[in-house]
Image (cartoon, rainbow, N blue to C red; front, side, top):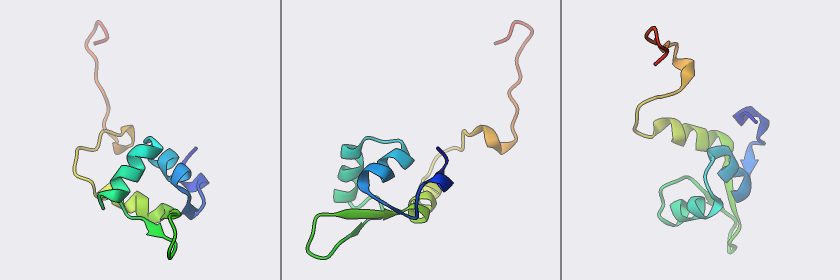
Length: 80
């Protein structure tokens, strides 16, 4: 499932699936204020905006290890 397959507003379970993390880990990140989240007034219900999560993810520090960067992997004659 690609990010475009997710609706614009996500439940906690859907956001965890999008980010490929466990729901409890996502909830902990919300409690620690490390990830963008929206709560309904007076309630415990959380919602996440798909595009906001993707932008947050893209801004995280780290090296891009995706295969879509145009880099090619070379191998030696024995395939390592």
